[in-house]
Amino acid sequence: MKKDIHPKYFDNAKIHCACGALFEIGATQESMDIEICSQCHPFYTGKERSSEQVGRIQKFRQRAAAKKK
Image 1 (cartoon, one colour):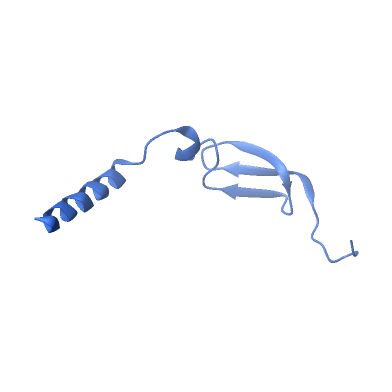
Image 2: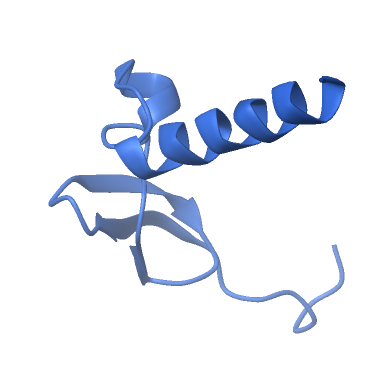
């Protein structure tokens, strides 16, 4: 590697999630604040989407059914 062209690498960078989780990973920034992580993301937790999303899907299906008639 060439000297003085790469950013400094932190082996124990602290990542703070909005849900309160704290991770330590390797990164080029010493600390980061994130909004969503594997402990609070619906894909990883198995929780369903919000009811607002379900309402939109139902509205779409109603419009599609009405168009077929």
